[in-house]
Image (cartoon, rainbow, N blue to C red; front, top):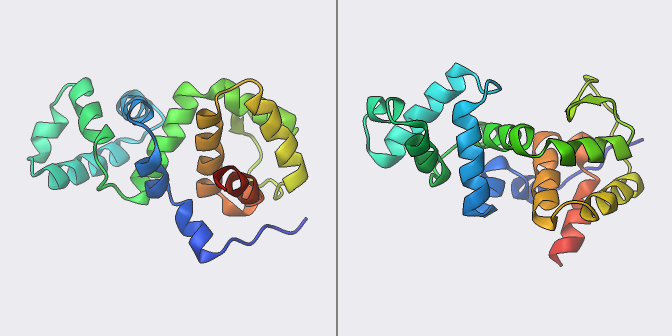
Length: 175
């Protein structure tokens, strides 16, 4: 199956930072809390995020590093000065800490082998739009549209080749 080719404009719309800026405060807060507590986030990524937060807030890095988790989560949730790597990590961790059932149902519907929502194959084939539509409809019957929408946009942001056929589905929601 040939991969969906996205335009530069479409690719830009699915950048992690664009997604991060568009989600509501509660989900941002949940993602930020998960970021600081999760073992999925490397210490190097946490250190780099502290540096970005410190620069954006005009704080010393030590002030952020030693702040309680709740305070750091608040700083992170309110920050729009992050890069795509950091926001991609936030979205990734949010889903693995808060949305595993949604991810499992979606991957099961596509018969993609996974462990707790984590895809086991290194490279999976680009998914067909028709199959994706069916899987998405199943999710909408069980999960909130905002959660489904965020998950699908996150998939595209992480791998536009495998998940590019989600773009017409997502665009149809926005029109």
